[in-house]
Length: 341
Image (cartoon, rainbow, N blue to C red):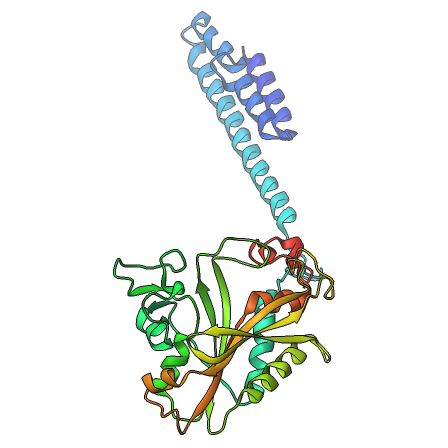
């Protein structure tokens, strides 16, 4: 038995000294120290020894077990240290390697068009105003001379919050013109950009949510010629010198006389296509001289002061500015489309 214990000790220590991984270590531990291991098998023979031999063999067996267990622990520690070393090597960051630049986005074409419009009007001395998107009917309609019964006040055209039709999502940014007339000192030169809402069906040039830029001037001796000159300057600054426009008579309760301004279709050059619905022109904005009644309702004497106002659709401006054929592309957030700008 003494020779068996010595052999087990020598073989176990040699094997454990060269173990390469935790699976092999566990296999050796079970082989020598397990319930069916070699050392256990030898100890089961202790009953065959005489009473004088048992203490000596028992002490020797305990020494062998302790030596093997110590070797197992030592091997396990070395494997852990090696695994940690390999992990640290794998996770080491080489600070000398050039970093990867993050992929950055850029401004949306709508923001680009709006910034250009702001720059143009600020350069002409205008102030940029912002206002609430949830509006009162008194500002959205009443003080703009759109009385009860006007088609724009119908539930089929406007998003209302209450049954009395007094609170709504604004259908235009014109309420900011009224607020400016009530609170600002004369003369006034303002633009009011922002989101507006109407019950329009979605198509190539319409959306139930879109953006407007309203503008207004009130001063002494303001005429329709000032309005046309300012709008033509705006269009040429946006789309280039020589851009073709046309003014058509129209009716708006807020202005009198009123007009609509079109720009020649950027898609077909005036020949007619689906983008312009075969007309060769795309409506860009409505405008006109501020109605005397509107001035009076805001406490301004129409005999002393006159003014003009306009409202331009920002999406249509961006479409013409960047030659976008379908308004829906602006809202779909398709990266393939947006990366073009």
